[in-house]
Length: 223
Image (cartoon, rainbow, N blue to C red; front, top):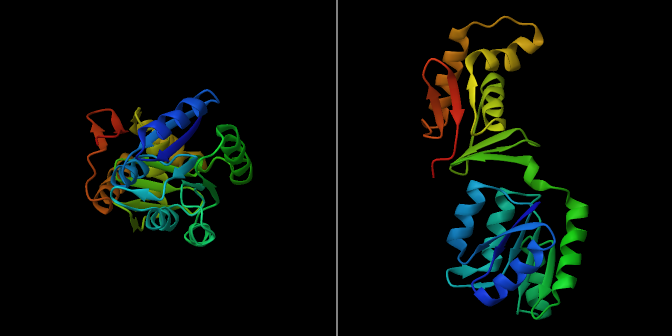
């Protein structure tokens, strides 16, 4: 199932698109404000964003710029009544990958979505997130509250393993086995404890990174 966000404040249009695309094996999340869309994107990155231009709390060009500054490869399609050539040019200049003018045929929109996804692949797989922590796997970068955080190689590998197992309790023994012992190097429990402490400090003691006493650790969304 392909995850898609639709930023649209007209409920009739939003739910017509949602109903159609969900019959085509999409999971569609409707955001009726830019503020809500920002929170949704920070919690989970979808495979594609449909974006209206005129919203109660801002302009689509600014929202598109914000998306592009944080997720460079995330496909964005404007879906708007603004069909003047100057608006279309502005949409592309501000980072859109495609531009569809209302009214539109749902079948045509679906075809354009599929064509864009064929070119871009499933960008959602590039990002892992938990609360306000996000990892960009392609660039090997980590962000906390949208600010980049510098991690050592060991800290990065530890966070990556926990993020890949989000929602599961991972034992200390399994972490040592998967992260360090895979290279044939012996690392004691104290090294893991120190690395975890440094990781937590750099991420500002995140509530989503939990210690399961006498067992190990677990990452899970709390907001």
